[in-house]
Amino acid sequence: MMQQRNSDILVIIPAYNEEAALAKTVHELKRHTPYDFVVIDDGSKDRTPDIIRKEGFPSLRHAVNLGIGGSMQSGYRYADRGGYRYAIQLDADGQHRPEDIAKLVQEITSSDYDMVIGSRFVAKSSYRGSLTRRIGIFYFHQLIRLLTGIPVHDPTSGFRIVGRAAIEQFSRSYPTDYPEVEVLVSLSKQGCKIKEISVEMRGRQGGTSSINWTKSIYYMMKVTLFSLIRKSFS
Image (cartoon, rainbow, N blue to C red; front, top):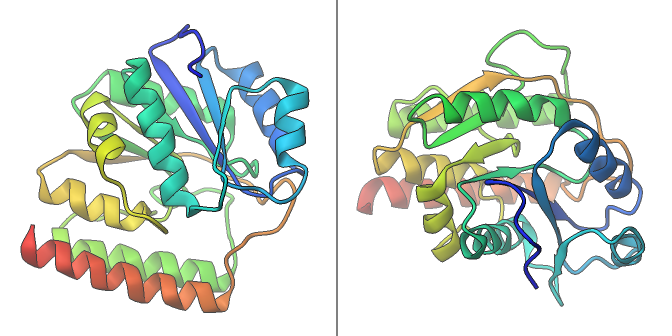
Protein backbone atom coordinates (compact mmCIF):
# COMPACT_ATOMS: atom_id res chain seq x y z
CA MET A 1 0.00 0.00 0.00
CA MET A 2 1.39 3.41 -0.98
CA GLN A 3 1.90 6.03 1.69
CA GLN A 4 0.64 9.54 1.09
CA ARG A 5 3.37 11.41 -0.75
CA ASN A 6 4.66 14.41 1.17
CA SER A 7 7.84 15.01 -0.81
CA ASP A 8 9.32 14.62 -4.29
CA ILE A 9 12.13 12.57 -2.74
CA LEU A 10 11.92 8.98 -1.50
CA VAL A 11 14.57 7.34 0.69
CA ILE A 12 14.75 3.57 0.06
CA ILE A 13 16.09 1.56 3.01
CA PRO A 14 16.88 -2.08 2.12
CA ALA A 15 16.96 -4.22 5.25
CA TYR A 16 17.82 -7.86 5.86
CA ASN A 17 18.16 -9.00 9.48
CA GLU A 18 18.82 -5.47 10.71
CA GLU A 19 17.07 -5.63 14.08
CA ALA A 20 20.07 -4.09 15.84
CA ALA A 21 20.31 -0.90 13.76
CA LEU A 22 17.11 -0.31 11.77
CA ALA A 23 15.08 1.72 14.28
CA LYS A 24 18.06 3.95 15.13
CA THR A 25 18.78 4.50 11.43
CA VAL A 26 15.19 5.49 10.61
CA HIS A 27 14.82 7.79 13.62
CA GLU A 28 18.08 9.50 12.70
CA LEU A 29 16.83 9.88 9.14
CA LYS A 30 13.60 11.48 10.35
CA ARG A 31 15.54 13.94 12.52
CA HIS A 32 17.72 15.12 9.65
CA THR A 33 15.45 15.07 6.58
CA PRO A 34 11.82 15.86 5.68
CA TYR A 35 11.68 13.22 2.95
CA ASP A 36 9.42 10.22 2.53
CA PHE A 37 10.97 6.81 3.11
CA VAL A 38 10.17 3.13 2.70
CA VAL A 39 11.84 0.14 4.36
CA ILE A 40 12.22 -2.92 2.13
CA ASP A 41 12.25 -5.94 4.45
CA ASP A 42 14.02 -8.56 2.35
CA GLY A 43 12.63 -11.68 4.01
CA SER A 44 14.32 -11.01 7.37
CA LYS A 45 14.42 -13.91 9.82
CA ASP A 46 15.13 -11.85 12.95
CA ARG A 47 13.00 -9.20 14.67
CA THR A 48 13.19 -6.72 11.77
CA PRO A 49 9.50 -7.27 10.74
CA ASP A 50 8.38 -6.83 14.37
CA ILE A 51 10.30 -3.56 14.68
CA ILE A 52 8.80 -2.26 11.43
CA ARG A 53 5.27 -3.04 12.66
CA LYS A 54 5.88 -1.63 16.14
CA GLU A 55 7.35 1.61 14.80
CA GLY A 56 4.79 1.93 12.01
CA PHE A 57 7.44 2.42 9.33
CA PRO A 58 6.19 2.51 5.72
CA SER A 59 7.43 -0.78 4.30
CA LEU A 60 7.31 -3.55 1.76
CA ARG A 61 8.14 -7.14 2.70
CA HIS A 62 9.55 -9.90 0.53
CA ALA A 63 8.37 -13.38 1.44
CA VAL A 64 11.86 -14.69 0.65
CA ASN A 65 15.30 -13.10 0.55
CA LEU A 66 15.95 -11.60 -2.90
CA GLY A 67 19.22 -9.82 -2.16
CA ILE A 68 20.09 -6.15 -2.34
CA GLY A 69 19.26 -5.95 -6.05
CA GLY A 70 15.74 -7.30 -5.54
CA SER A 71 15.22 -4.97 -2.59
CA MET A 72 16.31 -1.91 -4.50
CA GLN A 73 14.19 -2.80 -7.52
CA SER A 74 11.15 -3.08 -5.24
CA GLY A 75 12.04 0.34 -3.85
CA TYR A 76 12.41 1.86 -7.30
CA ARG A 77 9.07 0.37 -8.37
CA TYR A 78 7.52 1.94 -5.29
CA ALA A 79 9.14 5.29 -6.19
CA ASP A 80 7.98 4.99 -9.80
CA ARG A 81 4.36 4.25 -8.87
CA GLY A 82 4.41 7.08 -6.35
CA GLY A 83 5.65 9.59 -8.92
CA TYR A 84 8.78 10.53 -6.96
CA ARG A 85 11.28 12.72 -8.77
CA TYR A 86 14.33 11.46 -6.88
CA ALA A 87 15.20 8.28 -4.97
CA ILE A 88 17.97 7.77 -2.43
CA GLN A 89 19.49 4.49 -1.28
CA LEU A 90 20.28 4.45 2.43
CA ASP A 91 21.59 1.27 4.07
CA ALA A 92 19.76 0.13 7.21
CA ASP A 93 22.95 -0.62 9.15
CA GLY A 94 23.68 3.02 10.02
CA GLN A 95 26.92 3.37 8.04
CA HIS A 96 25.54 6.31 6.07
CA ARG A 97 24.93 9.58 7.88
CA PRO A 98 21.45 10.96 7.14
CA GLU A 99 22.72 14.51 7.56
CA ASP A 100 24.79 13.96 4.40
CA ILE A 101 21.64 13.38 2.35
CA ALA A 102 21.34 17.14 1.97
CA LYS A 103 24.63 17.12 0.03
CA LEU A 104 23.34 14.50 -2.40
CA VAL A 105 20.07 16.35 -2.90
CA GLN A 106 21.77 19.70 -3.43
CA GLU A 107 24.15 18.26 -6.01
CA ILE A 108 21.57 16.46 -8.14
CA THR A 109 18.88 19.14 -8.00
CA SER A 110 21.30 21.87 -9.09
CA SER A 111 22.82 19.92 -11.98
CA ASP A 112 22.03 17.57 -14.84
CA TYR A 113 23.60 14.50 -13.24
CA ASP A 114 21.64 11.24 -13.43
CA MET A 115 23.28 9.77 -10.33
CA VAL A 116 25.26 11.26 -7.46
CA ILE A 117 27.24 8.91 -5.22
CA GLY A 118 28.25 9.57 -1.64
CA SER A 119 31.94 8.60 -1.69
CA ARG A 120 34.38 7.66 1.04
CA PHE A 121 37.39 8.18 -1.19
CA VAL A 122 36.87 11.07 -3.59
CA ALA A 123 38.36 13.28 -0.86
CA LYS A 124 40.12 12.58 2.42
CA SER A 125 37.80 11.17 5.08
CA SER A 126 38.05 9.32 8.37
CA TYR A 127 36.80 6.04 6.85
CA ARG A 128 39.34 3.21 6.74
CA GLY A 129 37.53 -0.14 6.43
CA SER A 130 39.15 -3.55 6.28
CA LEU A 131 42.05 -4.34 3.96
CA THR A 132 39.87 -6.83 2.09
CA ARG A 133 37.17 -4.25 1.47
CA ARG A 134 39.66 -1.63 0.32
CA ILE A 135 41.27 -4.09 -2.10
CA GLY A 136 37.84 -4.91 -3.55
CA ILE A 137 36.93 -1.24 -3.94
CA PHE A 138 40.23 -0.51 -5.70
CA TYR A 139 39.70 -3.50 -8.01
CA PHE A 140 36.27 -2.26 -9.10
CA HIS A 141 37.55 1.30 -9.43
CA GLN A 142 40.09 0.00 -11.94
CA LEU A 143 37.55 -2.24 -13.71
CA ILE A 144 35.06 0.59 -14.23
CA ARG A 145 37.79 2.91 -15.43
CA LEU A 146 38.95 0.27 -17.92
CA LEU A 147 35.43 -0.41 -19.23
CA THR A 148 34.00 3.10 -19.24
CA GLY A 149 36.82 5.60 -18.79
CA ILE A 150 35.03 7.01 -15.75
CA PRO A 151 37.14 7.19 -12.54
CA VAL A 152 34.63 6.19 -9.84
CA HIS A 153 36.59 6.12 -6.59
CA ASP A 154 33.93 4.41 -4.44
CA PRO A 155 32.05 2.10 -6.83
CA THR A 156 30.57 -0.15 -4.13
CA SER A 157 29.02 2.72 -2.17
CA GLY A 158 25.32 2.11 -1.62
CA PHE A 159 24.75 5.75 -0.65
CA ARG A 160 23.46 7.30 -3.87
CA ILE A 161 20.66 9.39 -5.35
CA VAL A 162 19.11 9.10 -8.82
CA GLY A 163 16.63 11.13 -10.82
CA ARG A 164 13.35 10.29 -12.49
CA ALA A 165 14.78 8.68 -15.64
CA ALA A 166 16.88 6.25 -13.61
CA ILE A 167 13.94 5.46 -11.32
CA GLU A 168 11.86 4.46 -14.32
CA GLN A 169 14.69 2.37 -15.76
CA PHE A 170 15.56 0.64 -12.48
CA SER A 171 11.91 -0.17 -11.77
CA ARG A 172 11.90 -2.20 -15.00
CA SER A 173 15.33 -3.81 -14.79
CA TYR A 174 17.94 -4.00 -12.05
CA PRO A 175 20.81 -6.44 -11.34
CA THR A 176 19.69 -9.17 -8.96
CA ASP A 177 22.59 -9.19 -6.50
CA TYR A 178 25.60 -6.98 -5.76
CA PRO A 179 24.27 -4.40 -8.24
CA GLU A 180 26.27 -1.27 -7.43
CA VAL A 181 29.10 -1.76 -9.92
CA GLU A 182 26.96 -3.22 -12.71
CA VAL A 183 24.62 -0.25 -12.52
CA LEU A 184 27.50 2.18 -12.97
CA VAL A 185 28.75 0.36 -16.07
CA SER A 186 25.23 0.21 -17.51
CA LEU A 187 24.48 3.89 -16.92
CA SER A 188 27.81 5.03 -18.31
CA LYS A 189 27.21 3.02 -21.49
CA GLN A 190 23.94 4.91 -21.95
CA GLY A 191 25.72 8.23 -21.69
CA CYS A 192 24.30 9.03 -18.27
CA LYS A 193 26.19 11.49 -16.09
CA ILE A 194 27.53 10.26 -12.76
CA LYS A 195 29.25 12.26 -10.05
CA GLU A 196 30.83 11.47 -6.69
CA ILE A 197 30.81 13.82 -3.72
CA SER A 198 32.65 13.38 -0.46
CA VAL A 199 30.73 12.14 2.58
CA GLU A 200 31.71 10.61 5.90
CA MET A 201 30.77 7.01 6.60
CA ARG A 202 30.80 5.07 9.84
CA GLY A 203 31.17 1.47 10.84
CA ARG A 204 28.08 -0.66 11.22
CA GLN A 205 25.86 0.60 14.05
CA GLY A 206 24.70 -2.93 14.83
CA GLY A 207 24.46 -6.44 13.44
CA THR A 208 26.93 -8.18 11.17
CA SER A 209 27.61 -8.04 7.45
CA SER A 210 26.35 -10.90 5.28
CA ILE A 211 29.45 -10.58 3.07
CA ASN A 212 32.26 -13.09 3.73
CA TRP A 213 35.36 -14.19 1.81
CA THR A 214 33.42 -16.69 -0.31
CA LYS A 215 30.77 -14.16 -1.25
CA SER A 216 33.41 -11.52 -1.91
CA ILE A 217 35.18 -13.74 -4.44
CA TYR A 218 31.86 -14.64 -6.07
CA TYR A 219 30.96 -10.95 -6.14
CA MET A 220 34.16 -9.98 -7.91
CA MET A 221 33.89 -12.78 -10.49
CA LYS A 222 30.20 -12.22 -11.17
CA VAL A 223 30.40 -8.45 -11.48
CA THR A 224 33.48 -8.65 -13.70
CA LEU A 225 31.81 -11.15 -16.04
CA PHE A 226 28.54 -9.24 -16.32
CA SER A 227 30.29 -5.90 -16.69
CA LEU A 228 32.36 -7.31 -19.56
CA ILE A 229 29.19 -8.65 -21.19
CA ARG A 230 27.50 -5.26 -20.88
CA LYS A 231 30.59 -3.59 -22.33
CA SER A 232 30.63 -6.00 -25.31
CA PHE A 233 26.94 -6.17 -26.18
CA SER A 234 25.25 -2.98 -24.96
